[in-house]
Length: 363
Image 1 (cartoon, helix red, strand yellow):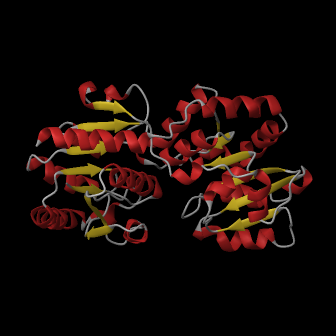
Image 2 (cartoon, rainbow, N blue to C red; image 1 turned 90 degrees about the vertical axis):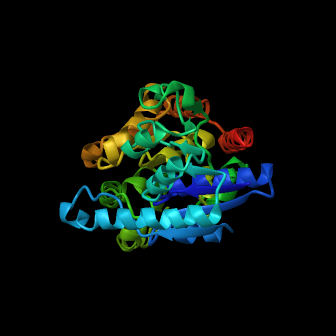
Image 3 (tube, rainbow, N blue to C red; image 1 turned 30 degrees about the vertical axis):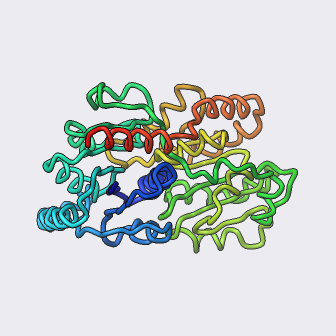
């Protein structure tokens, strides 16, 4: 069997794609998998590093902040469709899986026009317009929560949750995790996640309140993203209660060390929080398409499984909220218990099994 997995752009698309690919390989070792991504995006590095072959398309997404940057978009789109035609012709896939991102649309649309079975993994609680359009002709759509029939045909939906990396299921002691960051046991620890590029509003608020942590006997693990690493390094100087870096190679240690997590609310971050069962304060990225990060976070807030601060109120509200949470053991325990109830650790296996069954039955 040959399967194409299309999409990428962010870790929120790439890591679920790899989880599904790995699950497919376990269930059918002879399956041949080809990834299709966008040239210049992080999938072109991450996918080969995980041992899979990837082909890059000359495609870019719609730029919402600068309309002039969209002038060349139609040409790139046409070029990408021609590239996809050649890929489908040479690889001859039995199925195509779309995980979101620029490259997902032309691959799935082309496959659908050739009557190749297509599957969509929609990670967010509010789907993007591309997936809604593609969903009309998709074989099946895997979704994270109930109620997605507002966007897709009910008979095509399967609620699976979002695949998370298996490493987050491993048990790591808090002491061992703290040692990884050179921090001490006996102090409550806050993990601030700035994302791969850096969550500007969160990073700025942390820098302005850097002495808050020592004053309140707290430790800080601060993953800044590459755009804010230099500022954070200066703020960290001579403060033994703070660890900071642009990236964290072993995210499982950061989660294990943390008592509270502050992060954006991308679909995969939300899914990981459910698996690791940590109290979280989400600050949704306000410019995410259709404001889907707010919707992602609101799902947990409605179940008393997380707290949320709007991006516009980070500077005024984040640290009072953090202090109130860290000093309220009852609330911390309530959030941890409720978020753990939403955990789904077998989404990748369920999705892989369903795809293989559907493709086999269609032959």
